[in-house]
Image 1 (cartoon, rainbow, N blue to C red):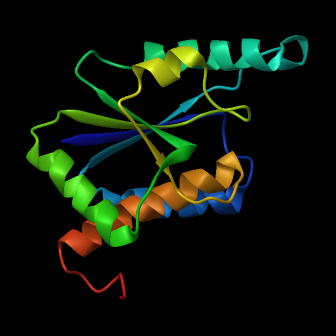
Image 2 (cartoon, rainbow, N blue to C red):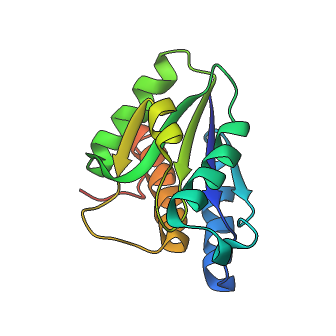
Length: 157
């Protein structure tokens, strides 16, 4: 199985970028992982929230293959503990799935078309985080999940 993380817009903070790169490198020891950044939509000042979500949604959907399973990182999604998320990853790997695609939307969330196409929604917290922080948190949780599955000493219960 391959895991892809799609996110709208680049991270401005060099410190966050360095941490993302560190956890991405660590994750590569466990699974094929790709972090695909969709460029910010141009001229957003001239767009309504709905138009911006639709434009971002088109870019997200263009990057999907028919066999991909898309999971949105969304505040209304299901919440997991790290251990249960690790079990979730194991079940996905056992299912024979080719590519599991997690998506972080833009500042206003996802378009209706993206919600319709998504198979699942996961929430990292009931709190709201910046889109830049969510990337780091999610990549770290992927890494944590694989260390849990391998009984490695990264995660403490």
